[in-house]
Image (cartoon, rainbow, N blue to C red; front, side, top):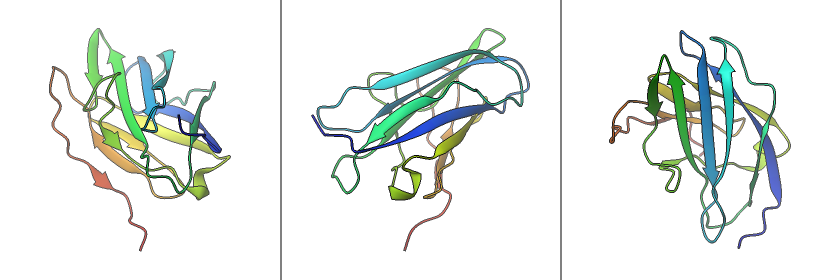
Length: 140
């Protein structure tokens, strides 16, 4: 199992128009476990207050993988992948270590806002969600 030597606190802003239950999971690859957190009844426009502490390894071959679910008005929206196989890659880097990261979730998009340069990907319903992801900025 990788030895995580860095961590960040993740909060999530509800960007949906209604109260939502929001869950995210994180996987750093290799033999590590998938970790997750769920927040219930998050008002629209509000940011969760109880952080999801994620651990990661700097300068390692393992990537950071993410998955998000948002349930509102009885409808489940999710990013690509699943709890056992998160499918959004967005790497945590040195600039993220020890930081509080405020991700965003709505019925259409999951944003991993990070000081190192976050990513976003689509959210949808059903078994397959089309990935329309973008890197907010690339390091050169």
